[in-house]
Amino acid sequence: MHGAAGGAPLSQNEISFNAILLILGGQETTRNATSGGMLALIQHPAERAKFLANADAPEAIEEFLRWTSPVTHIMRTATRDLEIRGRKIRAGERVLLWNAAANRDPEQFAEPDRFDVARTPNDHVAFGHGEHFCLGANLARLEMRVIFEEVSRRMPDIELAGPVERLRSNFVAGIKRMPVRFTPRPARAAAPA
Ligand code: HEM
Image (cartoon, rainbow, N blue to C red; front, side, top):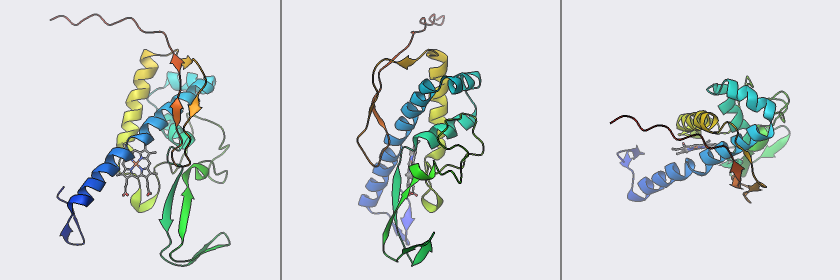
């Protein structure tokens, strides 16, 4: 609200756009990393057993992020001519950075197509890279940690109960519908007044 850019206070529009960015940035992304991470655990029982034995391990959250890569790509405009791996890019050209592909790069990750809840190192780019690195990364990590701890505790037998329907989007890698079933835990006794 009180920020300034180029010496001038932010306009009403800039404040509104920043608020929208915060809301949208934290919404589609975190929930798809969470549902996608849950699906990966359900589909990989051995990894799930490992995870349940150590549900607060930070490595698992990073692997959910790498594996799901909810923001599939971001765009940049080149500020100068350059060459990357033999491809010439001219100043002003728009370039797509495919986070999802980078997160399966065999030069970066051993066995990139293996879901490994203990993967280290795990220098994924699910939150982007550089100046615009995700502002909410640590909030998202915390949200996911709490959700996965609670779901593991309360619904240890959660399983698929029907076909998974993916979101039709080339920007957000997500799940539209994922029916699940689990054994409800008995209700807790009410705390004494
Ligand atoms: C798993 C969850 C999340 C993922 C995968 C994710 C992904 C990303 C990515 C890839 C970028 C970089 C965009 C770019 O380079 O242009 C980004 C930026 C951003 N994210 Fe997230 N995000 C997540 C959660 C959140 C949360 C919880 C919030 C806010 C509460 C948030 C707010 C933002 C904002 C404001 C930016 C723009 C930062 C800037 O341009 O300097 N994100 N996010």
